[in-house]
Image (tube, rainbow, N blue to C red):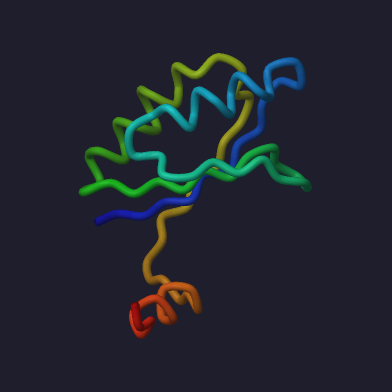
Length: 90
């Protein structure tokens, strides 16, 4: 499983549309509208690098209104949330 974090800028007049389109792409598990240098953070989880390449270069490239993106591939996850859920008693 490949996890990637994509930082995205969008045209000001198309923020809502870009967010909705990103959220509808298979493999994009979460999209956050954020403050700061970027407009969105998208979390992507896919089975392999080929699927990630297709998502970034084809599917995401077709989203009208994206002006810039930066993709980071995760090596390891260190999450209190993930650790806590492993030991949670139902």
